[in-house]
Length: 72
Image (cartoon, rainbow, N blue to C red; front, side, top):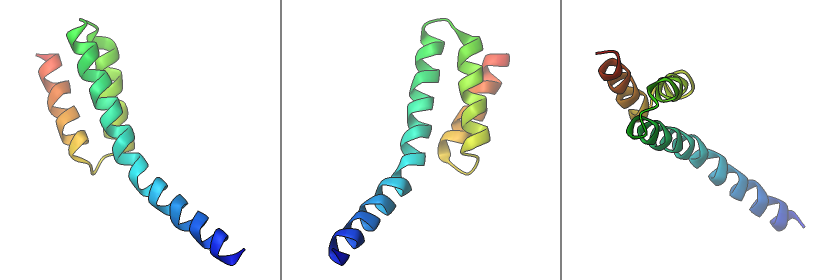
């Protein structure tokens, strides 16, 4: 039973540690798709969400650049 609980705790830790990067990437992919589909308002909203939720990620830096490009 202890081994089972330990295994679950390790699995949970590994799963949670990878989630934020995956979510940021998913948001970035969706925002880029929105741009391609000529929906800049939704793309801006997604880029802002990336910057707010994942400020230290490379996706946040990319999102900031895309936001700047969309304003021009």
